[in-house]
Length: 407
Image 1 (cartoon, rainbow, N blue to C red):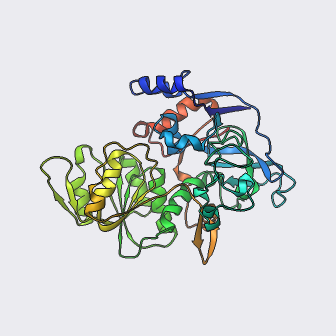
Image 2: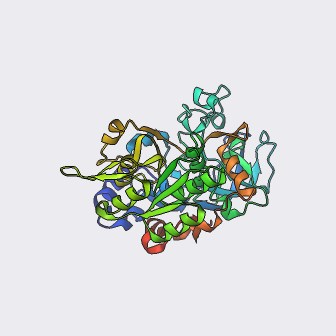
Image 3: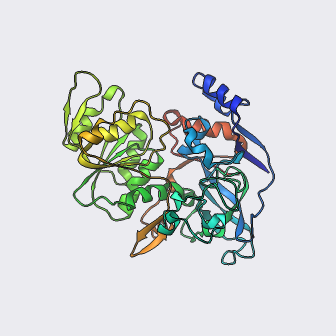
């Protein structure tokens, strides 16, 4: 079968880093770490696994970070090369191991990609998995399969950017008929947003600032409203077409990002904050939002998230940051901010019980409280991967929101 894989080739890495900033097409060219090639279908690691035929697989911001070599080398021990990319997956079960009996061939499913203790064959869960923090599993480099934080970073499982992959039965969730395939391929980013929101939900009367109106930022707006939470929601968006959508999804106010801090005054006015001018450097903000969700992971977006959080405020980092080099951390100590990271999804308290975040996302979509299908704006076959990547990366020109493969 054909697959799009990432290989940790040091010469190609160095070449792409040196030339790619001048010619971005290099990152998916012949001398890149990316390749489109024939590979063997992955086999079931044991009888607790199933094989899934992919219907749709999304291109995530973290996938673009990987392709454009923005990831920190600190993540490399948690991957095994070469791996097939793709962790946003909806498909149909084609093969069922003898010990995965609650699943059947032909069922339409989504795959929670996290490779934690149970998927790796450990019966004695690590402390993180016992707490339900599956995305923080302490054994992501051990067990029955090769290292990998998730499907899409492990050479043994395959990934969504191919026609087939394998998954442990605990990762596979059936889809009710009310959930369309296009809504299903959005479950992973929606679950990521839900995880960030549900760990510490904003309260009625508070002001929330969402920095970034890409897929994750939009999903944070949807998550807040679908959960019935009632804070005031303000969004800092990069593009006008994004601003239109987040308003439709329930944002109360939207401010457009401008270069050279041109958005500072308008955003401060919306948040009821003051803009102070230092001797030099970026403007200082006094006041701001009670809760900030940073959904981009760039230097400027992290700076904005910290600057526009009010004293004693909370900043949640959902964006996939690599190695920020120009972030001013002064607001953290000056305003005694609480800063949290948020990785992927896990389990949540929902309706008085613990549920996988994916299950919460499915319930909210199937009950009509969330509808994300319209965010899928572009679909490509695998062999058009270069065009798909360029479309996902060039949002200003393409007006893309979610780009997916249709293997």
